Image (cartoon, rainbow, N blue to C red; front, top):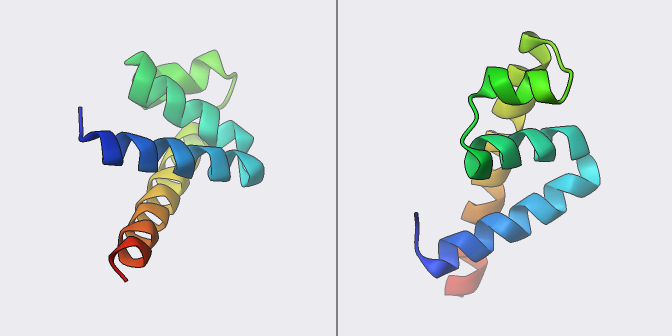
Length: 76
């Protein structure tokens, strides 16, 4: 779900995240768009459960910050 602007912002955030953390990006894509749990996505990517959750937490925080920054800059 989400508005078109939110979808675009998420897509842009994922593109930027991929430059820094490609594994975290794959995990987010599988969970968000593939409907997998974090553990299932981690297994598909051959990560340990701990690594999968670390990537998930990092990516969620990174995306949240990135989208918040985009919202602030677009209001100026």
